Image (cartoon, rainbow, N blue to C red; front, side, top):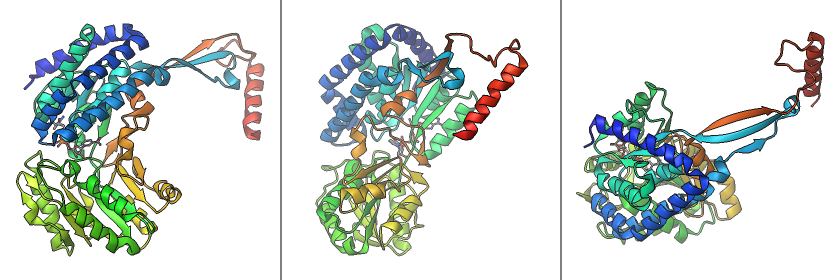
Length: 468
Ligand code: NAD
């Protein structure tokens, strides 16, 4: 467990290293990050073994997680200059005498606070992009996955020894995260975790006006319309709901299916989910306390009139939970309103897509969603109506592996974006610059300009904007 002094010292060290990182320029940073990426690819098994050991997830899943992180690190390294490099922007008729330049400067040191469910992929969505934007990083992994965090930091130092100190890990429980967000002096905090913790982190950040990016939970819905390929939907729903034992922020927790497809879909979901073996197809619930949440959601749903199509409270065999498929779950039951974070899915019948959209959007969360509407065009039209930060048409979680797409949510799912150009800009601060090229006819920033001339210029502008 890192002491407050150690956390502070790490921030100081990362800040010193960030100065060398700045001097390396876009090309130097890109080469260093791609070198780190290649060495992580070579060490994939070592990283995956550590992830599997700490979370309990199958080795194959851990490898796939590392691959996703590599995809994002690659994109961030290759695109940082294009997105953040200095450019000219139009200065407009009133300022034609000035050149306008925009550049994105690094913020300094980013404090990254991560969760345990995807201990590589999730924090790397901040770490990789923050480094590519020119910052130093101090990372506080979840206390359940400290070794993964330390290994990531060590792998950077091994691969890029000339920039050792730029990316450091500190370890320990929430109190260590609180120090990192509060008194340690970071320039921005990128937090991933539950909305309750995000509120505490926001409070710690408030004391120093430190900006915060908050990636929180979800209650993602899948919307299924008439004409959808029900085998494909069932396959996607079961994977989206049960993979990683349901411990996925953008995992499937709710399904809204139109009446005509309801029976066929329920049958297919149940038959697929029944074939899953906890401990083989997915791991245990990593956080022991989560078992109680899953049990409460299932029990409350059943008490409120839901039916279990597969499993039920008896599916809890700590630390594993067998797949649970519920239906007719009242919309105000905790299984529909709170993040369950277990291998549980609620499949509810709706009249039509309008009702599906209304129900999907009624959640306090707004992270991801998926649509199967029978045709791509119909799916896209429904997707446009969803309040989610990311929507997949004809698949689940399709956006996770597209590094150019920003990821993040609204409401209880948090604010700010990781990934893509927005994810690079999240860790940079714009610096606007004007360069005066010649004296304007009527200089509105000088007392020396004759009053009548200044008034004529303002009147000309008024006329122009009144006309067009
Ligand atoms: P959590 O909120 O319990 O903890 C997250 C991190 O915050 C941990 O590192 C923890 O030590 C730290 N922390 C706890 N208290 C703190 C405090 N007062 N100040 C600073 N840091 C503190 O979440 P978790 O159980 O680790 O992760 C699961 C949650 O993360 C789920 O809600 C899941 O949906 C969410 N999640 C979101 C995304 C996303 O990208 N939107 C990705 C993965 C997980």
